[in-house]
Length: 267
Length: 270
Image (cartoon, rainbow over all chains, first blue to last red; front, side, top):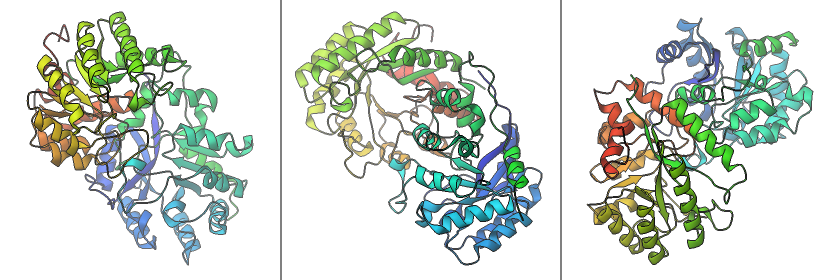
């Protein structure tokens, strides 16, 4: 089986999930899990902040939680671009060494054509912050009756990528359909600033990951483990089941994406 | 610690009547299964998988054709594939005849999808026949079905347990706790129903799911399985290996429980 060397997991969170109990969603446990799976580093968000009105307190908690593990855990705070003071959250993120911020337009009811979305993407580009979007936390069939939010749409992703030629975007939790719908609706230069994790892309026998590596290129992908919501082993297992007759596969480096975003920042 | 063997009691194949790239699909399953260490795939084909009648409401002709294709694959791969006989309970006579024909053709279990609610009286003759022949029934289940979903008459654990309670001498495999819906709801429903064995298959890989089932029902009623996504099956296998199960429990989940509920000598060498 193929082995994936993972320098960075871009799709990790800590903190409680409102709709079910998660075992030990804590920073120190995440550090041990990363060590067990030989993953060098994780970009970490605050899970409860996804549903908070004002994410600032949860971001402060996130910074405090990851600070003792600064060599392994990098904060990816949540930004709500329709809440007063959101630009200060971006400056806080830069000050805390965040490589990215996380936007949850579906949970906030922010449409793809919203000026709030385009404004925050431009502001992220100004500051060299990668924009992270999350398609889902649970399968649509499973969601709590109070979790009526739909999956992130291709229109939202396209809007983020097209807003600013300096915007770098990483999407977590997309399946093959959403990835293809979005990728093939962008110009090559837009495609080059958009990256996907493959935590929700299937391996054999449908072999969606193999198909996407062949058609989009493995360099469009980064590693995302979806801890603590899902088993971090899943994307590793999917990668390991790639056919051995494929040429050696190299996915993109999250650190390189962050460096590219910073290289074009203006502030 | 890896299990000594691995049986996937919830597998599927395709055939020329169901999709054009069936050979690639089937080869991919076998190749990945070999990489994962799967000793036996116990599999079914659901008619034409929607091509000429709906997947979950397969016509009698499609049921028969799909079963024939499944038996041919099992015959072609005797060292690693076993067959379920798939039936549609809306056609009782056909279903019972298919079971008899399936057993003669080597089938070792009965597959029910979502053609009729599990607690409907029409399912009783099938459950009784399976019990009489010592065949387990693999039943498609929507975990905590809170409404009707299109193109299927899905059942949840509550409905399957009603059937299982009426047929205590028949073993039922409750399909894919990771296959959609709320797996946490199912746990309490089946906890005290000894002839219902949940399988771990499905694309869902929620943290805490496997631990919760083992805590509730113990390792002797849980069946490792993959269904349509071998990748998530491998992830759950690796998670089980890391949980710290007591001696023998991993083997129970991964293959020994299957050898107990399928007919004797279904899996030579295990």
